[in-house]
Image 1: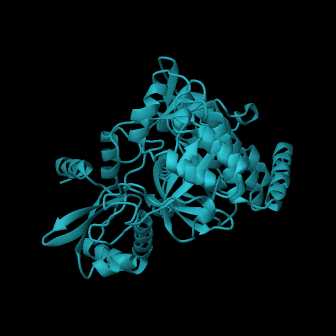
Image 2: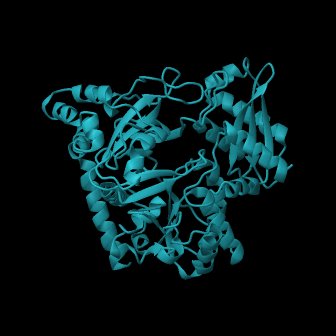
Image 3: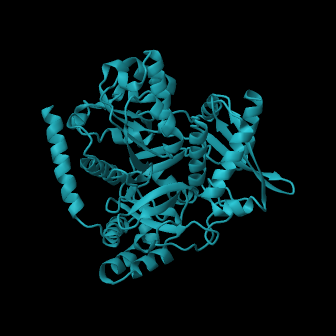
Length: 516
């Protein structure tokens, strides 16, 4: 057994054991994180406008949650458009001390899944440091995975993401978050990092996949990291190129797959057909706005990072706080981490060491274990359907597709759904990806039954306002071609599970032109 691998695993397991002894104190950790954030940002333009000095004094000297009440009274809730148009654009133009001390050197470009234009998210030195420390913490928790062999820590780590090349714009740099954080990779880790900086910097996704495929036999990969859809495409390409039975024929030491950003379930069945033996799945929750949570134990869910430069707030995701299109109402109810309940959907607000304040990140989560501060991502505030009160979440959709796929023995990796008028009431139109023949009526009937079992509101509305459900099966290439047309191929990009607004017309026009 390799000496380095043995030393790494031993030190990781020891440190992980020490961390497990420490009790989680969510309220204490979050108040400390809050105090640090306001202490550092109080003399910025944002901090002076919204009385951070007064709020900070309350956090330090007053008992209870008075500081939070003052924070809510003084600081409005922001979405991306509002905070960028009022504040972040100034930092992007080179102004100092806007929402965070100093000048912002990096902006992560993130297009999300529904907006056509790229979002420019500030990434400060403090945020890079927080991401690096959280990444180290996650590595430390690998000590909880006793089945991981020691020599795994000496194998290659294949990270499949966007281009690491950054664009220099005036006095700052812009690009994918992976490009911004690449410079923080420890020197000792660079020998294990694949596909290496030269290939990672490629902007053309096809060229990147081709170069990785060509070099694949030269690597001994033990760990995969990235979005499941694109890893599936890559592994299929490698297996086909070298006429393999499965990827373990080439990489026998492949043991773990770290993923995030989407539900794994639609891809898991397809991935496992590409593996020759069981692989451990480890979930992460990292966005351009920060590293929010990660899985720290086998069979656990995502554990919130409460002590690394992020203050969390939670808005109950219900009709009192959001309208039928997922827009936030005025003066919504907001809660701190100690006040949440399990099995309730919440929209996330974050304040961060990159100068995001009471920022609606767009994700919805559910606490599965409040004691351990574990959450599950259930969807997006704009990616759900409730035409007549059916309240169908992305979590429901993923689970429904997974159950139908298993029953019918299908590999369904991509799907999307839209709400349509079905006079005099409403209907759901599903588009499902499959390269094998599927009986659409059978699939539709089974999916409808599963969703009725998963969601009581959906079951009620199927007897009232939601009069029909339709399913159209398309080749998988249709979904990838659409992403390519939208300029969202590879890396962080995911196909939206729900289409709304102008995207409905664009998608349907695209299908008429290319897949009629």
